[in-house]
Every structure is written in structure tokens, then in C-alpha cells.
Image (cartoon, rainbow, N blue to C red; front, side, top):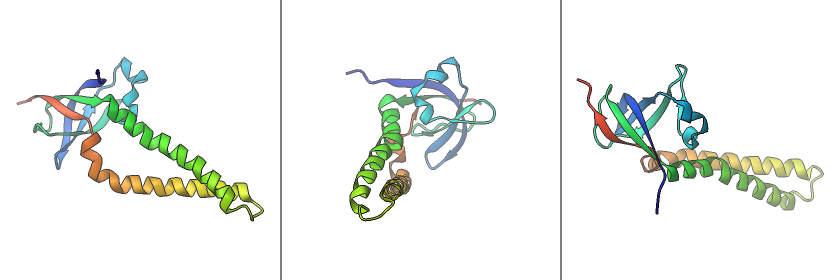
Length: 145
């Protein structure tokens, strides 16, 4: 089975606890790229990514990074798909819970938004432990002397 892998060239900006921040210069294919959710545009037209530095790159090294398509899909679903499902479920449950109230629609919508907030707080608190599993990784280093 074929698995989509996006490969980019980058420069290591900083290192911390096995995680490297790299700068990727955007090109014309960035507009349609599905990994935009992982890249963070910077002020100087570069995209900054946190990547798993398991092969020991140093600051200033030119590196090749890989982003698995599955990671992009998982991140997109966690950030957009699950909250949408939670919102609909919250509204549906809220109409039952608040059926005795006069503003049932408002309370149901607020209930759904509250559940999404709880989900994002949970995701934020558990993201640190799963971060290395979904991060792009450095696969090649060209040392700059």
C-alpha cells in the first residue's frame, strides 16, 4: 500500500529536547499543500515547523524533512472533524437537557461550544505526550561547517 509522504528541504533554526525548529522556504506548491495545517507562516515568507530530530541535526544544518500524509489527516481531523461532531452532539443533547427552558436553542448552542472548549483543553494538555508521534521528522542532514 502506498503512503503519501511530503518531502521538503529546510534549515535548522533551534534545538530543544530532541525537537528542532526548521525554516522551510515556501514554493509554488505550498498554495495547494495539504500540510498547511502543520506549517506556521512567519513574517519573512518562511514556514516554521517543529520536527523530530532523531538523527542529531545541529543549528544551521540543511536538512530534508518528511511529513506523512497520515499525520496531516490526523491533525486535520483532530482540529476540525471531531469538534464539529462534538458541536452537533452538544446541540442535540442540549435540546434534551434544556427543553424546559425558554431559550433552548441558545443554551444548546452554548452547551455545544462549551463541550468543544473542553475538548480543545483536553487536546492541548495531552498533545505534549503525543507530539513526537505526529511531528514531521528529519531524514537527511547536510552539515554546514
